[in-house]
Length: 332
Ligand SMILES: O=C(O)CCC(=O)C(=O)O
Image (cartoon, rainbow, N blue to C red):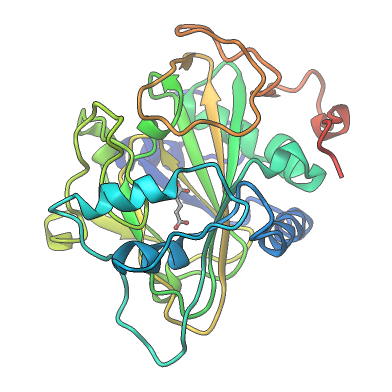
């Protein structure tokens, strides 16, 4: 076990290695949370005109309603018409939604790669306590930042997040990668906090990505379908944590996880940051989701040395602010 000098105690490290998930309290400052809230608000405001922002709740309604066309505004990252056909052709697929309430329609907002145009997100991703924590949990000599993803469940959102494993969504080989789920609002099981299958990172399996609104695996992935956790939750050791802004939940890239809808009247906003360690290698994995705006020419087996995957740990000197070094063309 490595010697810890940061926020991760030996007991936390052991729990992460055993369970594949760890909740750390007060890991981020109020200022850092406010940077992320600002970025998420801007992403949501751009829904309809952004090329990367989606409302998966609206999409699910379009998928399950035969006659309803698929509308995604300007968002063109995914071929959602094909996705609708894929889900409808899947004999195992079923809607994954909370019971209808009296409140109309919520929103399951999804967007990615805010770090490429939002300095506040870069400050959290590069200069908070998270890179060092990730290095400890991965026993990594250095850490690359992979990407950020936003997951928001507005009040009265019926759509669940289908249980899935993250590895096969990413173009990486090896499993030296951790995902940090950052709640921007208090979150409990009532409003859709994340749920994790304890120990599933040790099952020795890689599962195909699914489309979040259904367990349907991407047809282009050669990997097997994730087990139907929603169908028989009592068979699995599912763990969740009640969290407040400032807390983070970190999971191993092979830990199976999902979430309920948010039938409550309060928001459940979250940002998920992904970090890789020095043993991760680039792998143009069939079925992985194409990343937004990458400019590298890495080949399979390469280290993640590219401007798309900044090295965020170790710092050349303490207190250095890496976010100050980045000026990206998309910066607003
Ligand atoms: O917040 C959610 O509903 C999904 C989050 C997730 O799957 C992730 O962070 O990997």
